[in-house]
Image (cartoon, rainbow, N blue to C red):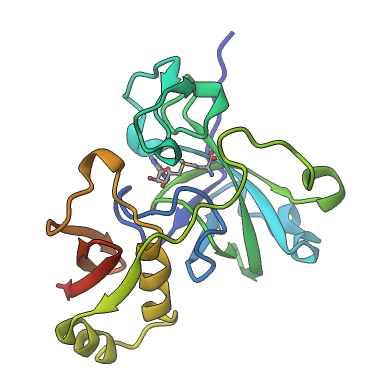
Length: 230
Ligand code: SAM
């Protein structure tokens, strides 16, 4: 049996590469993104009453790793990247069917003619991610407060203190953004996005966010934002 699904929408997010994206939704509430429904699904009827929900489930394709092989065991970053667990006991993107599932905040439903856009926050999604389906989050079904959660019993700790260089401070002050960029950068970096195998003090890391490269460096438990490069 095989199936073919068409994307019903596309994500527009500030993340232009995989590195730097939080490993799960909700960890960085400051992230704003949109989900734009594509024809023929951009029918306002399809989202009628959706605004009554504060959260939605998004099923999406890990489109940037489509050609990569899956393995039955993976090494979750949560276990420091050196212990293996079964792929189905993990949220790894490298799976037999590279489909992801994220619960995100639905800020607003914006319908304007044939443009149907869901404004979201707290996403863990790359820009241009194809979306297969949207479902409302229903607390009495989807929330299981006493669930056992294997090797991920609680949210990851904030590992690093974030500081800004004078250059980064100046660059931040020169920007006009719809989001609190300073708060967003702090929340992203305090989680320490580095894979354990590549965590090196003094090395300059960078990832593309919005229209700039965020460059930063770790020293012990401190991360210094060096610059927002053009
Ligand atoms: N919450 C989802 C889940 O559990 O299925 C995704 C979890 S996965 C660990 C999150 C990571 O997937 C992000 O940190 C990012 O590196 C990666 N990612 C997000 N969107 C992607 C895409 N469209 N293609 C490939 N990788 C993506």
